[in-house]
Length: 378
Ligand code: PMP
Ligand code: GLN
Image (tube, rainbow, N blue to C red; front, top):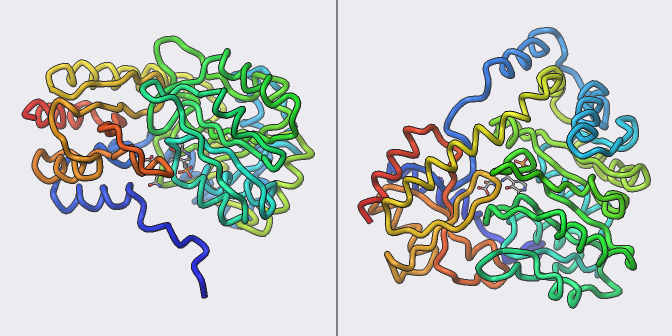
């Protein structure tokens, strides 16, 4: 056989988590909380688990959870989606992204991805036989470069993947950015795959600008999110996709023969837990405390923090500390300082070097303090 993904190896997240564990380092690399979920969520899930709700769910997800997602999207972003036809529960955002790509991208179609980007986008496009077209976000600010995006559009462009709040940079697209995307795509039939997994982690009073807020984007978008991020349960791998019926019909055809349906008791538990909007509305304050604590602590180090307007990631420039390239610096930091980080270069198709690494602050305050004490020794 020939490899479908000849250039793919073990992901940097796996590599750095393994090294962190081996060296006993504080793991601020791979993005996941080191604290447990709300006991109320664990109770909400264990009731259906012990209550006989352990067989296949409906293909698109249980109605109660789809209705809860519809309510949340309407409350947060002011757009009504039909839970019957326009919302599907998925095995995390990663499966939703792959499913959306497989549903709409045909061999030879181009898909614009904005580097640095989450590492599943490019392989998803490649697996569909599509051609990823990588466009860099602006150097320094990681803002969308609409001239570069416009230049990358071609008659073969089938879709663009956008991700705000953005992993790894922590930048957040403004309403003006979304408006520009809407205007740019208006004369085209390009679809938007909108990865909004960090939708509830936006700080300093700013609002998340979902594609659902913009009529001209919503009509061409698959909005994807993940309960793993919002409820501190990355290991559950449950998320959802939201799209107008014509798009969702196609999405479901692929979903049906990809996973058919996802974990039933978790869906029931999540539906109950979502009935309380404060469970997602409290998230910005919860993480802003951690971001502020972490950034204040970084002032004691020689690392230079970049802005972090959203997500649970804080990027730092380490030029004052080391000449190593990003991957080598992350290894050195893990082995010699005892803090694991993630290099940005692997998030670029061309392994672009900026001497910037990503640190995850979804950690207990004590964990952040321990990491900061170590980083202060740099
Ligand atoms: N997109 C982005 C931008 C992410 O950071 C992540 C989490 N690693 C995912 C998608 C995947 O989410 P899930 O774990 O629900 O598949
Ligand atoms: N999204 C997580 C991160 O960026 C990693 C998820 C994974 O390991 N695939 O750290």
